[in-house]
Structure formats: C-alpha cells, structure tokens
Image 1 (cartoon, rainbow, N blue to C red):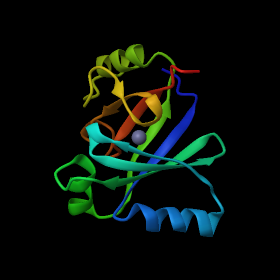
Image 2: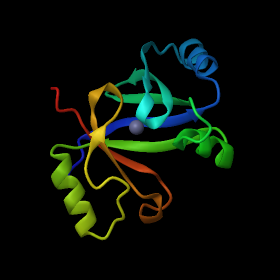
Image 3: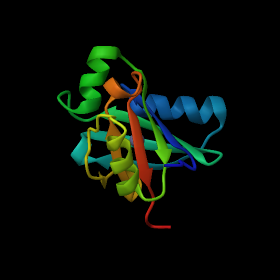
Image 4: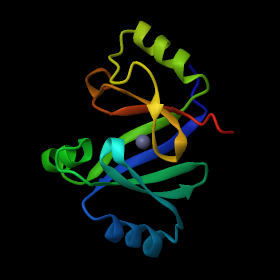
Length: 136
Ligand code: ZN
C-alpha cells in the first residue's frame, strides 16, 4: 500500500458552528461543505488545506462514535485519514500484516468516499482511516 497523501484529519468538536467560526476567522479557511452522515451520527464540516482537508465532527447522538469519544476524551483530534488507491486490496494487505480492522469492507463516508477504519489498538493509539475517492 502506498497512500498518496493525508486525505483529511478528523477533529471532534462539541459545537460545529463555533468551530467553523474559529477555522474561518482565525485561519481564513473557507468551509466548503457541511454534511450530516446519519450512519455515523455526526454532522461534518470541511475545509481544504492544500490537498488535505480538515474534517470537523459534531455528534448528533450521545451514543454515536463521536458522542462517546467526546465524553471519554473531550474535544480534539479524532482520526487521521490516508488516501489510497484500491482500498479493498489495501485492507486485505493491512489485515495480512496483523493489523486489526474495524471495517473489513469499505463503507460510504462523507463526500461519497469509500472508507474503512483500522483499530487504534493496532495503530499506536491513532484511529486510522483509509479512504478512496472512486468518483474521480
Ligand atoms: Zn474521516
């Protein structure tokens, strides 16, 4: 597997509007999309920084993954996502190397990307996402 770049960094926030204001006003980034991912019980907001995105994640349900993360760890970096080509093969290769997968097969994430998570137990504590944009 050879990731091409860091696709995005996911950051858990309590209040999406307040966080959008921060990234807009302090850094001058433009929020180009706000999207709810019902499946993940989150509302997301995106900023482009070079070819990497900042993905803000606000929980829409305290029992969802971001709700639980905020309760346990508070706000902060939630995950890092690497862009790969051929996500199915990348997952198989990762599993063959003994890394525990959260998603054995890719699912649809924000922006229509195919995504899959690796378990932080196997990745030195960093929740790691592989993603592939099959629309380009
Ligand atoms: Zn992500």
